Amino acid sequence: MTSDIAVPDPKTIPPTSDAPSVLSRSGAEVRHRQRERRRLWGRRARQLAVGALLLAAFAVVAWAMRPRPVPVDVATTRGAPLSLVIDETGVARVKDRFVVSAPVTGSLSRLGFEPGDKVREGDALAEIAPVSSPLLDQRTRAEAEGRLDAAGSALGQAKAQVARAATAREQAEQELQRTRHLTTSGALSQQALEQAEFLLRLRTDELSSAQFAEKIAKEELRIARVTLGKHDGGAGERHIDVLAPASGEVLRVHQKSAAVVQAGTPLVEVGDRRGLELVIDLLTTDAVSVSPGTPVTVSGWGGDPLSGRVSRVEPAGFTRPSALGVDEQRVNVIVTLTDPPERWQALGDGYRVEARLTLWRGEHVLQVPSGAVFRRGEGWAAFRVVNEVARLTGVRLGHRGESAVEVLSGLSAGDSVIVHPGDRVKDGVKLQVNP
Image (cartoon, rainbow, N blue to C red; front, side):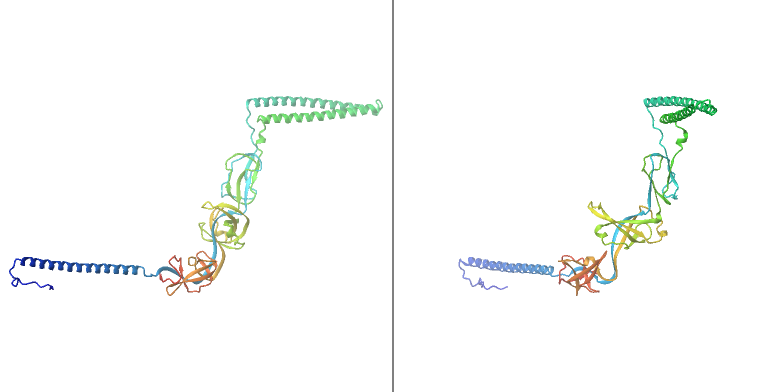
């Protein structure tokens, strides 16, 4: 590196006393200029580095903010079968069931039937005998024994009166015969005969009254003996048979052991499983779309799927809390199985079933997945994929199936639509279709 400052030759400098000071000043200026030059180059290098960093940061931000394709999942509109169904659980029950109750109050014998046993109409299901006399305390028993003794004495008195009345009647009858004979011979008047006849009728009435008194005494004696539990053994053998009202099998036994039952107490349930039906409780908002004849597929009962049809929708609903504790209005729908009984003979009363009611079915229906359509104002819309660009398209829907919906207008067969579009999907956005 050259300098613009001329350094004097020491040989040309006159030998004066100021020469050392001039040389020192020239060396200081050279060093100062070299330091300034190094500072200038360092400043320029830092400026270049900062500029390069800013340029790189700008490039990174520009690269990060560039529009990227939005990854989406797509589906293709197609024509295929579509069904409008309702899935709900229910129970099976015997259509014609009979709850056999005790006809009278009495002592029930132990039932010998078990659930599942076959019975025929008229078979004796149980026996009800009279209830045994209650236990008496000491005072009541003493009073009853006193009444028993008094009744026995009254019966003896009544028998004596009967005997006396019978003897008096025999005497009056003999007197009437003698009076009639004497009246015929003319020894007595007709008035004597009439008086004898009156006396016989009087004695006959007295005998009848005495006999009735004897019967009353006997009944009072029997009542006194029954109070003390001293009735005859034949009374305890009397019973009433509880008969089966129809042929079938025993479904439930409500009272198995022997006991004293009141009239109307349920004893057993009898029914015929060949008349099995299904009870499906639906929301009332769904039940209004169900009508008699609606086809039903039954599954989830442990066997092969069964076929059936709705026989009736009950006119009255009921309130039942849901699994979340919200009260729901529901109504029972009765389903009749159309398959032969051999296919569902293992299905019993109270078994749980899963039913699918098919309200509508189309064989060739233009449809898209339910997640591809969304509300837009008062109507529906979907995003079509055109050259990897999202295009907002209004659609008109028809029936809604389990996982697909019917498209009436707005889309054509073979169109690609976005399934479950996110917030980043807008009209005109570049798309990246996931494989």
